[in-house]
Length: 493
Ligand code: NAD
Image (cartoon, rainbow, N blue to C red; front, side, top):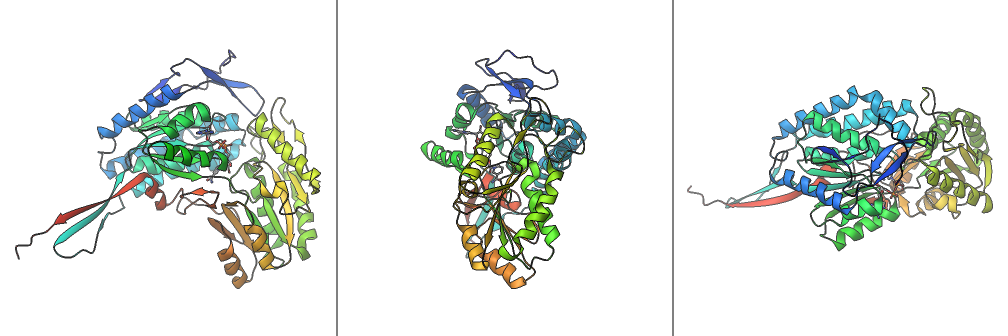
């Protein structure tokens, strides 16, 4: 709790039953901007009682079918309006994201706002084009296989892409007719609240989309443990994701879907089609979003014969990624989300040094804006796959460079990790590309590129990178129940 001044520009109250409300306890917490350490506003510190109120509002809205009862075409129309309104407020939303979590405003607008609107539009557009099924049964019966909304969906998301992560879940959940209670990260709650305001303006009825703000233990756990929540969509760390599955099992066996961490291997063979492109994409992808991306290619495996040349080219690009004020138009590297995350990144950098990796670029915290949290783009060479910086997700602008002898060695090292979110292979040999892509244990494998992404393809991980997939039509599986209806046919013929 704090008595710091609030900016009139941001409203940190929760959104429950179609209204902005404070926490029942009256408690708030400071929303601190990583850009300069200033307090942006006070945010409602929701707890179990607030979660209960939000779930109750969502339940009533679901049961009276004010949204689920609309035809798919009607829901589609509202979702399109929702997307249009988001785009019309792109500047405001982008600046909110920048001030709240530190990313460069140019990307907040072009990437985050656009992807959020596109996601909402895409699921809205899809929902009146999906047909149910009739099973191939004998003539004496008809079996209909239909999809129904699961009911009340809890959504818990992290801070690195606050709007996009929320959209990947709320869009299919809402399009399918569910009611939603969203808990954004306490580190970046503001854009989620604006999503709810804008959804309501678009015509999503009160109670259908609620947002509770607060910490994980105080607001997230009550949602994951709630007996009246039918499914939970979680994106965040593997540590908390495991707890989500436990909480689902401890309560009502709600469907639990988790999109978790990554330590993605990026394998560059000496015969890659274009070394300059491989270097640009590898460096650009690890430093994008300050390295705070679940799918960042943080373990770079370069074939021995080209490693020196690769490092030299990579080092030449590092000056392009120096952190600067994210509000400025040309900035490519912004602020780390908060002091806690920055300290964690710095501890990993220290562990890299102490375990014997060679720091070849960066490694320091800097302050291009007084009071803010910034880390230089950092590269370690000579990393071994058993070092902490190669095993654990750093979630900051730190690249670990390793090397390998041949394809088998590359795949063995790449797969030797608890995570399995994404991976990449660079080679002009089509057999090697296919063989390695097939052998990599990851939800997405890139060949001769890294940053391709689209709402049309599933996103999620093998192993401890989570359970289930966001995006694409597959995401509907998470927020719908499959029902079989048998109808006896006593044919008069
Ligand atoms: P986090 O796990 O600390 O927090 C995520 C969310 O869970 C937050 O809203 C937090 O308040 C909540 N939470 C924390 N403790 C909780 C508890 N006990 N009960 C219920 N909720 C709780 O993760 P983070 O630091 O916000 O985000 C970074 C992580 O997210 C990284 O591991 C990253 O890889 C992962 N991530 C994964 C994907 C993906 O699609 N796979 C995408 C983005 C981020």
